[in-house]
Length: 364
Image (cartoon, rainbow, N blue to C red; front, side):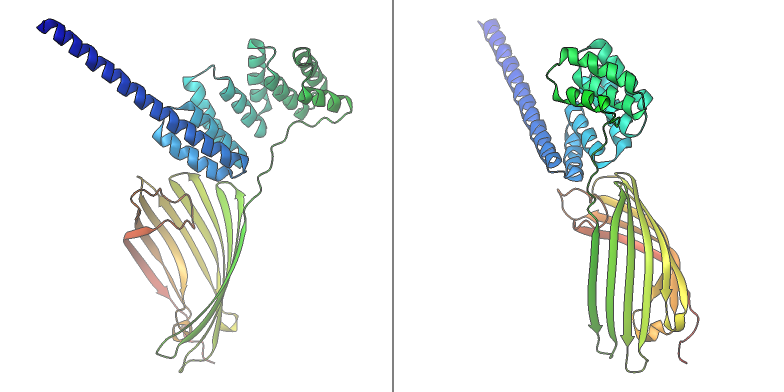
């Protein structure tokens, strides 16, 4: 009897373990499907960067799921981040060499970067395995048209039409070739979300210092990982003991994000004091995210020191190096995706070593 009880107990424990594993797998699958749906919805709305963030976060939760990896690659490709997309598609094929969707997306990405030979090789391999593969036939025909090889493109389309006689895409290609319109597929250009900002401030203090400041910023994307920013600033200062002074500043800055965890920005310009006396200013910084919720930075800069009219008279600039350590104040919030993100941050520490430069008062 005791042996029977032990056997029943073992069977019940095994059944409970299987049920728990099944419930866990079901919960993981539901989570993946929700992430895919959110990313695909953002893609449909052409919010490609938002889609990439959603899918990237999802891939951190489910690092082995190639469906998320594939969709993230598509989001990168739509946003113009071709290198990242190609890397992801190749990662999928490293573990699933027969993944047809990853092969098609890799071929498409290579075509967008004008690597037509490598792209066409993938399409031909797919057609060799499945001659009725319509997507591969269309991709190969497009590559051949880009390479001005219209007779070969015509043959590919005619063969594909024997399998898909009602295909509107193939019929469109056939008509275009016959009418002499020999252009292949082109990437849909993403609409850049550029920005123009302006602001005006007035400050006075108990010592009688007055400062009027206006600033204009123009920021535009050169490519998904490279942003250009132009900055114009005018300051008009006056105090009880100092004359009215006008100072103008102009800078241009490039921001490059080669990896999700790395940001490099550099720029320069000039500050224009009274009597057209100008001084160069510049700044370069490197910001690194070693772990989640922590940013480290270091930089070298030369900036104007113009808090009041009295200080501005001496035409001071400060040059030196600096470092910064910042912590995300939100326990569950992700790190900011780029400059200008309003995620609350707590500064853990900062340090600067600077040398002052000046050229004397401006009084006539």
